[in-house]
Length: 388
Image 1 (tube, rainbow, N blue to C red):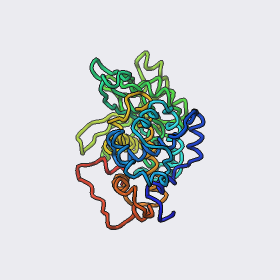
Image 2 (image 1 turned 135 degrees about the vertical axis):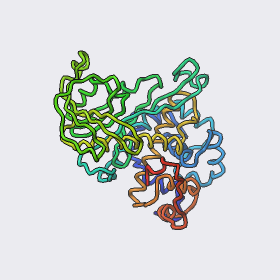
Image 3 (image 1 turned 120 degrees about the vertical axis):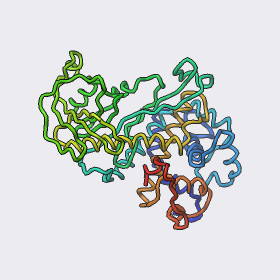
Image 4 (image 1 turned 90 degrees about the vertical axis):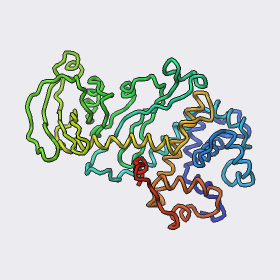
């Protein structure tokens, strides 16, 4: 890389421009556009994510100060608040959603051999959702309750590398379990859910896809024990049972046998009951798999704290979805850079360094691997452990 190029320009070298252009052409993103292209929009909003800009006026002020450097950063169009607002409102958000999937595919290839704490050969995913609160008077299209608006991010997280494989954005009033209808399940993979996703008709669809699920049982769960397997109570496992559903409708929805595991967590002093259709893995591994579900919670907490997805640069649905997808793209892009440059730093530290060095003309590897900067993590900031 040329030492005379800015860190931001070197960062954007990792963006597959041909794939981005294909996404733009798919939705005619540059149709009748003369000066401010979709790439300009993507670069400006990526800059905003990396430097924690608060508003369109904030983005405009920062980039206009660096006007002589914009061309070399890849930004060809004139940056103004009105131009950005118009682009956020009119350019199809699916352009950036599709491009995020391109980056996700690249990242998953890089992290395919990543260790997540359990020695398993198959893919393991955690699925959950998080709600982003909005002001009803500003975002009337996202009405949630009588005086409240919001949207939900439904995310399927690959635990090998904590890469979001599938993300769907819905209104907050959409029930979590309905998001399962839009997933395609990979044969042999393991999917981890919390109790909100216990719907036996949908769980049976996972079973029919030759995939496995691990979830927690609800308190009103009705079943019939067929037989019990031997357990080692020193591991925390209290019971390992093969069961059949006994409710009329639940048995109709899920006619096959299930495995029920009772577990006592000595640390939290909680008694947990797990359900799974996997009859081969040891019971303690099933319990450990469910514990790994916490990674998706950490992912949500992390992106809410370190990316701009709670305060938005536009008020339309298209503007909100555009900003979220570009934020996800930046997250995955930095994860790709971390792997390709073989950096030992946490993702949090990389983002902090980039936020103050984008205009510097220093090789990016030198900036991100400098030994003068030491990782400092607060003991109570568990979310920062996600990318250590």
